[in-house]
Amino acid sequence: AKVALIAAEAERLGELVTVMLDLARSDAGRLTLELEPLDPELVVLDAYERLQSLAPARLRLAPPFEGEMPRITADAERLHQCLAALVDNALGYSVGTVQLAVSALSDVVTLHVRDQGPGIPEGERAQVLERFVRGSTSIGTRGSGIGLATVKLLMEAMQGELRIGDAPEGGADLQLRFKILVPPPAP
Image 1: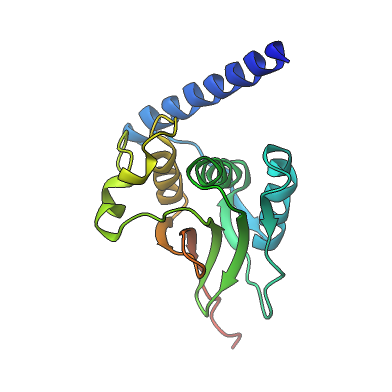
Image 2 (image 1 turned 60 degrees about the vertical axis):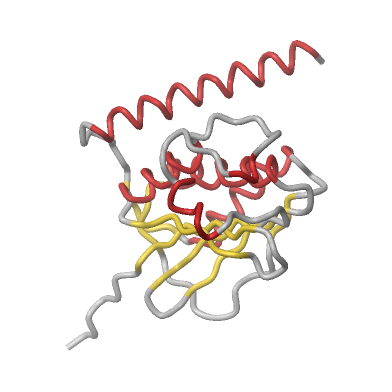
């Protein structure tokens, strides 16, 4: 069991190094992305299936969205990294369930990672998105503090944004938001 833990930790460090290189590259404007149209519901389902083993009893998938779900333009692997970082964060900072969900408004599609933790105080939200800053509710948990900064950066590279909201039952609702470019009506 110890070997498995060491292997998992080594893999985490490897991912951390990759992410740090991405941060450095993006500073130099060289972050490479493979943008393609993606079905947000499939993205979330895929993330759920890939991350479920982290916490089988805690990770949940919200019921499917009622209504038209437009496609988003994103890099599938980068988007998965963003969701994985948010889920990892949510599992670390809260004790209840963590829910993956998708919602759509007329011109915005949002991927949600909602937890039942203490939430992130309004006044700290902008800071928490900076590199290596951890919020006051993170005391006693381990983590580098790079997760949210990286997610913010990857989202900006994909023309999206990371927002921190409040989950309906309390806790934090971390949102990956994509603006939808509505095609002009046919002549």
